[in-house]
Length: 161
Image (cartoon, rainbow, N blue to C red; front, top):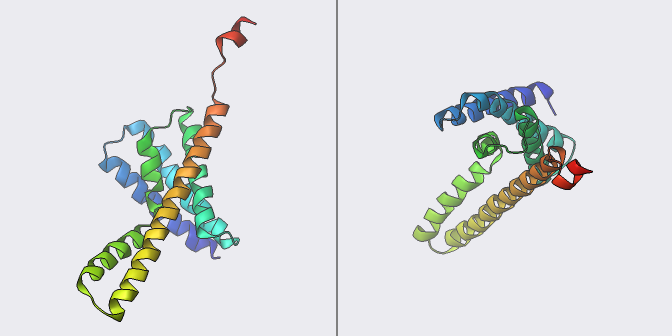
């Protein structure tokens, strides 16, 4: 685990997340939280993997951290989806998705043993995309749930008592 390499990778991913948020016309007040969340997400994911956690669990922990950091930097339990989406884009299984689409093309063209290999690769890449997507969704749900507890409003009954 090379910390300098992880930090450089995190910085590049933060720039990517920020550029995607600017490209998607994110309001200016959400640009810095997107940068911070993109940086922290990749940093946390890579550190967790360096400490021996599997890539899927590391992605879940990073998605949770992204949701928490977004809520804490914006100071609201209502985190704009564009911040979460842009910050998590570097986490997503884009290589597996590209390979899956390439394997899908191969399945329609090949025959024999090459077809069997392409079909197995297609199934494996599809499973990887689904598992990482589910890990991100669970991490976001947990993070937003904790934010809801942190920033909950007092009910009318509590105010009157």
